[in-house]
Length: 577
Image 1 (tube, one colour):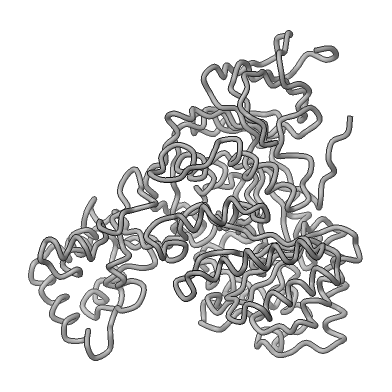
Image 2: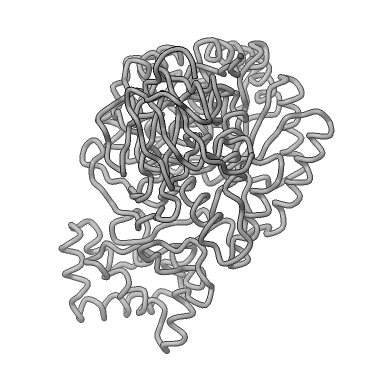
C-alpha cells in the first residue's frame, strides 16, 4: 500500500468482509477511523494485531436496543459491547426520554420501567435529565464518550405525551392539529440527528402502573401523519411492534406509513404460540410490499425470545404462592435458607395445592412446566422438549413444582430456568431459521439494555455465529451469510451505509474472533445499576479484539479503557472512492 503508515494492521486473519463473499486470508489496514486496505499489506502498522487462525469480521450492528437511559450515565454499553457489537440503535418500541416536559419525568420513567423492565429506582437516580427537546437529548448523549457507537430514534410514547399531555397518556385520539404538531416535531428530531421514529401497538407493553402504552390505539391518521413528518426530511426510518391481531389491517397501516412518507420501515417478526403459522403470512406480506415498491423488513430474533426465571429475577414459579411471598422481599441468602427448611417447604406445597384448582394461583407463564428448562452453563438455547421440567418430573414420578423447587435452590439460589416464550412452538428453532434466511428480514430484537430482570438477549449476535454456524444439531447457516446479515444488512436497514463491511473507506469497526472457542456463559445477575439496581449480564469468551473507529476497546473480554464510541447523528453515507 502507499501513503500514510497504518495506525493498525490486523494481520493474517480469515476475513469475512460482510458482503456475503467467502472467507479469505487477508490483512486489514486502518488509518484513523477508516479501513484503507484489505489484502496483503506490505508495511508494518504502528500497532499490529496477530490474527492467524482467527475470524476477522466487521463489528456487529444491533438495530434493536434500549440503552436510552443507560447511555446517559454509563460509558460502557454492556451487555452489547462485550458481544462484539460496535453500533447500537436505541429508542425502539416507542419508549424513550425525549421530548419531555419537566413535569413528565415520572411518567416516562414509569413507561420505560413497565415496558422494558428497567428498575425505576435506577432510572430515577441515573437519568441526569437537563433536556426537553429531542435535539437537546442527543446533545446530552453526544457529550458522553462511550465504548461503542450509539444511534437514537424518536419514541412515539414520549412524543405523544409531550404534545397531548394527559389525553395522550390516556390513549385518547389525537386531533388533526396535534397530529400536525407531532409530525413537525418528528421532522425536527430527524434534522437534529434522530435515526427514525418508533411506535408500539402491543398489549404486552404497559407502564409500571399497569396502564397500556399511550400509543396502543393511536389511529392510522396519527401514524401516517408522523411518518409524513419524517418523510419530509428525505431520511429516517420507521419501526413498529404490534400484536398483529388483525394482520391484514395492521399491515395495511404499516404500508400506509411507508407509502405516504417514502421511508423504509421494520417491525418485530416472531412466531407466536397464539398463531404458530402466522409468521408465514407476515413473510408473504413482506414479499407483496416489496413487489409494490414498499421497503419494509422484519426484525427477527436469532433464537427463542426466552424468559429467565429464578429467585434473583423478576419472575419465578413461586412468585404468587402466599407462603413464598412471606419471604419474597428478603435478601437472597435469607430466602434460600428459609426455603431449605423442610417445614417451610411443606407449607409452600400445602398452600399451593389448596389454591391451584380454585384460583390457578401461580398459573400462566411461570408455571408452563412443559416448556420450561434448566438453562445450564453453557446455556442451551435449543433444548429438547424431552428435557423440560414437566417431562423430567414425570419420569421421576414427582410433582413439577417439587422438582422445580430444587432447581431454584441450585447454586445457592442463583440458577435460572429458561422459558422460550416466542419462536419455540415446535420445540426447536426451525421457524427462526425460516425467518432469518428470508431476504426481507434482518437480525434484531436483542433488547440490549432492557428487561434486565427477565431476559438476557443482548447475546443474540454471539448466538447467531456460534449456534447457527457451528453448534446446531440441525440445519445451519454459513459464516459469510450470518456476518452479512448482522453487519451489512442491519446497517443498511437503518441507513448506516458507512459501516458493516470490511473494505477501503468504511468505518474501522472490526471483530477478531476465536471462532472455534467462542462460547457463551450462563447469565449472571449483577447489582451495578444506579441505586444498586439489578441487571442480567452474560459473558462471552472468544472475542479476542473488538475495534471501534480503529481503536481496540475490548481484548479477550476485558475493556482496554479506550472510549472512541460516538453518537451517530442520522443516516450515514456510503464511502466513495
